Image (tube, rainbow, N blue to C red):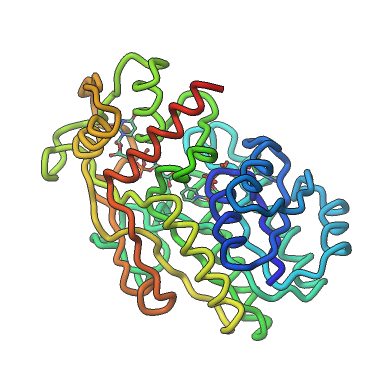
Length: 335
Ligand code: NAD
Ligand code: UD1
């Protein structure tokens, strides 16, 4: 298939392009490089042997986005482009709604105009809010989101569902990611945090690299194995492979499916810290702080639907995720 990947030079998008190419698909990337660099295209080529076509285009710029559709006959779209910083979304909500909602609507309108019927959308476990019991199941539906970022994901899910109800030839797979971490084993692509990282593993990586003094552990009085928060961490390469299966599923079915992508296993902050210490071979300093507002104690996926519908099961364990993250961090430091 010829696949448009929006946000394809970003963290998850770049790994997905590598896996799409490895599965024989043709990839065309649209990214405005707000949170990534053009050099990622060369890295994708180095890993996969194929240089994807690239348009430095903003999805908010409908005129230029339309040119991409005029120049290419797409079979499918994987839509990653968007802003993703939870705290920032609270401070500048309109910017988040504009980029993540208005940008998405531009894209969906062009898909309709050019009859591109197959879509995979990047959603998040954040849409479950704290309304439900773990493991989170797709059938729970949408919970109460606690920040504008989460609400943009929820709204996109609703827009896609309505749009596909109105046109029964359309097909979409909405993937609800749990906590993607790690990097490609080559160490060439990975997550490059913008500013002070909010997420656990990018923060640990900066402590290990000497950029931060210690990890702040947000609370150790939760009802969990050791009192620290538990999450379902998934290797980004596993997540990328789930996209290949999802887009192939979308192309051979109609309607809308919502599918969790996680491992189904939860690890606490201290367990991740220990795994990272094993990967880098040194002790990582930390201090226990108060709970972070808005955090839930435990979050992990029910993965039954991904296995049943997509035949997808995550392969990498937490040690491999930390080892790959560490390799990429070391390479970044050398640049
Ligand atoms: P990322 O920031 O690395 O990648 C997103 C890419 O989109 C970037 O390269 C950025 O430059 C581009 N972009 C942003 N706005 C754009 C616009 N208006 N036009 C064109 N390009 C634009 O983020 P990521 O971690 O790879 O996340 C990809 C998607 O997955 C996002 O939609 C994110 O919300 C979602 N998601 C991520 C996580 C996570 O933990 N990383 C979890 C759940 C969902
Ligand atoms: C966060 C977001 C969520 C988003 C997800 C993926 C919040 C409240 N939630 O979720 O909306 O979908 O990222 O991008 O921001 N931790 C520390 N110290 C740190 C960082 C994290 O102890 O410096 C702990 C957290 O308290 C949590 C765990 O590590 O228990 C994971 O945190 P994080 O990586 O931020 O992911 P989520 O909390 O799942």
